[in-house]
Amino acid sequence: MAVERVGWPRARLGSMVPHMKTTVEIADDLMRQAKLVAGAEQTTLRALIEEGLRWALGQRRRRGGFKLRRASVRGRGLQPGVAEGEWSALRDQIYKGRGT
Image 1 (cartoon, rainbow, N blue to C red):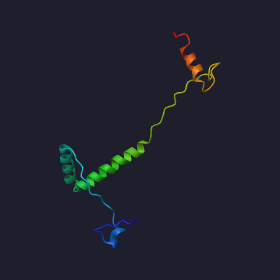
Image 2 (image 1 turned 135 degrees about the vertical axis):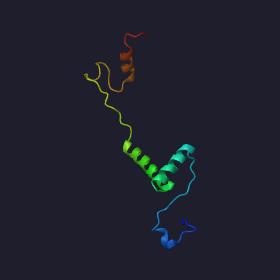
Image 3 (image 1 turned 60 degrees about the vertical axis):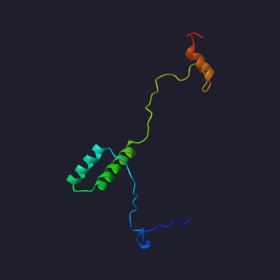
């Protein structure tokens, strides 16, 4: 399926960085602060927002995934009479001497 891009000269398509226009709601106080910073740094609001978004995405990539801590204990493995995967025997051992 061919996609035709209206309004883009074919010769320039490969050399231009694609941009997407979108609307984002930003809290008024945050927008005021961003405009002040952009003005003070003589940059555009767009550049400031892109910089912040790139930084935030980079932080998430560096964070990595969840890592389960090692929580093993010293011992000699399974108790006598409990085979691995035999849940009924394991349950009986856990509740032994505790009522039912």
